[in-house]
Length: 193
Image (cartoon, rainbow, N blue to C red):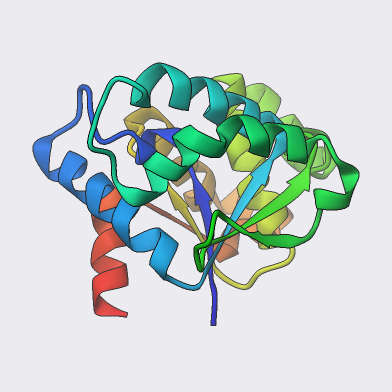
């Protein structure tokens, strides 16, 4: 059974201002993900951000884990493919890997329900973080369990508050299907599965 996954770009960068344990977990995640049966949900907007982050953050670091190396090579192609409507709502293998990519929409934030859009206007988050949360909510409408993996402490706190809000839990049922994890916790989950 496939793992349903939403990855923040911070969970793909094994460098920078992160604890060493988190960097090592991101490296391991980059080696593990191509080899497991998982579906990575994205939007065209997310892929734009991913493309710029890959170019800026990964191109000067080598050797890269398998997933990050592939993303650096194919991020521009993914962005072009995401512009093709035929790529939407289909699972596509990612560069000869078991990992599949699923483009759910051009912009997930424009597709979520009005309740969630209202919430997104209130919370203080970047546009990229709002898009990522919207991808997770949209994915929760089609999958029973979703892992939102992020190394971004601010996004982690925002998402955790959203998930724990009793008011939102009643009006936004999909939140119950989302589990937010740091890369090190997600790798531990993979190791025990």
